Image (cartoon, rainbow, N blue to C red):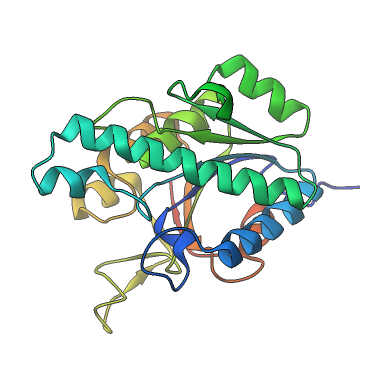
Length: 238
């Protein structure tokens, strides 16, 4: 029998803002539970999943720096926000029967394991979902860069960037009714057009390794499964 999955091992990048749902701040239990249900479904198909989640629903380092905070300190606070989101996702996935581990790039005591590449690979091989918390562990790097980096470290075949919109547009579709969506882009086009897919460091890492990135709307039920089965969805960057 042929494998129904186009991608066996995937790095799923989730924005922190997407966890808010209709709230102005924080974590929506309903959104997190729905997301866990979607992940559990594709995990049941045999997919090996690594997750990176942002922290913008709680604290964003760039915004903190813009208000006068030291950028390094603001980014450290952002890293802690990603740990909180990661623990919320782990809790929801565990309730859905999915074995999950949180590996953090910063030391957080008994709340998460420290990130060790070999440990992450062993967890994936044993069928556990691995959530990578705290970005790269360094200030001045976004969770987009962390997603590309962790994808390469675990030998993922693709990065899924799950957002609140259905792909990459030439301008913000939530503010511009005439925004044009792209079905396909090259890495170079993303960099030259300064499209807000992922930051330049993340796209450069993906380009140098030939790692495809697929951007799609995580709020549409079944989209993660459609993407992992290779159905045309969102925007492909390769």
